[in-house]
Amino acid sequence: MAEKGAHLSQLLLDSSRPSIFELVAQEGLNQALRGTIKFFFRVCANHYPEKFGGLFCWANEIQLVFDCLLQNYYLRNHGASFAENFYGLERVMKDDHNLNGKTKIHSLISLTLLPYALSKLETYFSERQAPNQQHSMMSFSSIRFIYDLIVLINWMLYTWGKSLAHSPVLHLLGLKLKHSSDNSSPGISLTKIIELSAFFIQFLEWWFTNESSQAKSMLALPIPPPPHSVIQNQYSKPRAGACPLCQQQWKNECVLRVSGYVFCYRCIASYLKENGKCPVSKIPATSNDLIRIFANAE
Image (cartoon, rainbow, N blue to C red; front, side):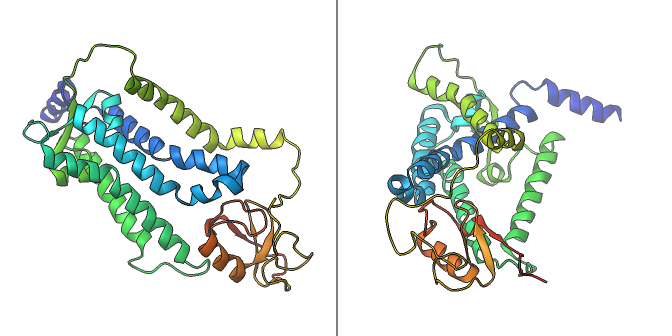
């Protein structure tokens, strides 16, 4: 027992080893930064669908380009990602050597392309999953659960001092994080402004995902009228009691929550897959925005 206590004390006294709080904070900042571009285009598309609706469909790709430029700059100049450098950390080899060109490229791929690919796969399999279909034994969600379990085990091993890296990705790359030895002189620069704005990004993420703040803001506003497209087309004036797409009585009706219009599930599911927006209001939407209605169910 005394040996374990001494081992934990030695880990706490290691000044070069980042604490769990620093690692969790930089992971959270990375995720918040990863959604800034998409959040910006979503707000613009909701207010100006005819101008920003098309750009919102490519928000993930624009975010990928932005991430590549930002992370590449920090890896080349600071040997760390944006979030790691913000919290005074840097990436080194497990033998404490600095990053070389090859490991910087691998780090850039793990920071940008890997999250982008996981996000695309998750969206793809969630759209293919039918509402009443049961998950198979080796579905994408099961594989993702196994990966998250491996991440959790790696965090526990790092906490107990059994692993040099807190992330399995860093472990595979042969890297670890330590406190940076770069003592740059304080001053106002573009990078400092970007770093200071990170806290503002996290605040916006909390504000727009906090249920209590959303409820208060929604209750304080009057009920808006149903949205209509400024562009007149065959779906602009849906017939009452009928699907705006097929103009027939609803079958397996569902509501598109971004606009409030009711469609046949088969009609709107195929339309969203091809166009990615509401056919009436032109507001960007996906199949995840569909809500089943059980009004006629027995």
